[in-house]
Amino acid sequence: MILDQIDQCERYASVYPNFAKAFAFLTQPNLATLAPGKYEIDGEQVFAIVDKARARARERAPLEAHRRYIDIQFVISGVDEMGWRSKPLCKQTNAVYDPEKDIEFFDDKPETWIAVGRKTFAVFFPEDAHAPLTGSGEVHKVVVKVKV
Image 1 (cartoon, one colour):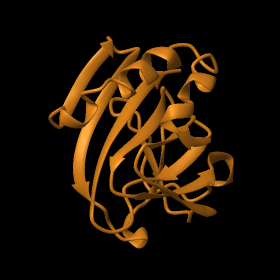
Image 2: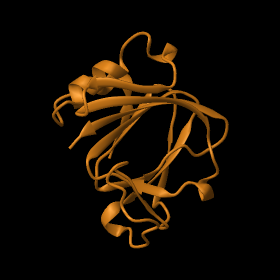
Image 3: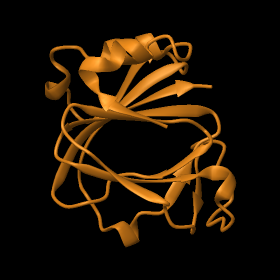
Image 4: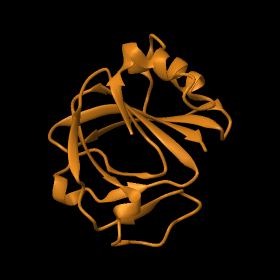
């Protein structure tokens, strides 16, 4: 997992193939004006999902993980209190992995909670189980999916 401010994203652009494309999308000047929905960046290799939603209580946010995509979750406004736990430590599978949606859920509890605020991003690799969209109030965010 990586956590940092968006103005520091250049130092991570070479960490993984296509991260540079993801961060170029996240640093565009009109990002906050994009309507909720899916945006193609590089076909199925890199795409973004813009969302505005009410945060939920921690107890209502299951841990999730992905196998085919890395998540770069960027908060435009609000605070997303994201839970984290190392996926190899997750033992309580909640549902069978859905390959079409590239998601699996766990009943395990996060080891830690991280307040990801405005202009901050968190990167979750396939070995990072995470519980996003928790806290209070509305969160305006972008999740960029980078194919593994």
